[in-house]
Image (cartoon, rainbow, N blue to C red; front, side, top):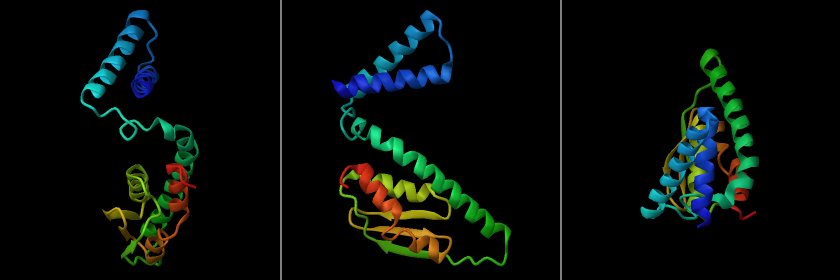
Length: 158
């Protein structure tokens, strides 16, 4: 029940943010649509702790800004490598064991690596990630990294 209410509230807030309309009929239509989508999600049995992880909401407020800054820093480094032919490109594949234990934690970590320019998660298994990096230092930077620690904290185990 709490997941349904939370999903409805999140969808309605998102709708309100994007629409910008505050007329009574349109606000009621947005609220009705949000509730309908939450009911469909409940009926499809995708409304659970994994499908709508509201327990991660507060930790996400500290993780997302940090990830945004990391994406900007990495984009700057990749841009420098592309524009300056003297800087080395040494494509490398690295295997390492992530410290996350939940599916949400593993997926968050793998996606965070992929979102960061210059690295991409090629393979993500429960006990091992295979990461491709534009440079050797970028790829090896994924091993025992700050990102790994922050995702573990985001996951709720640290």
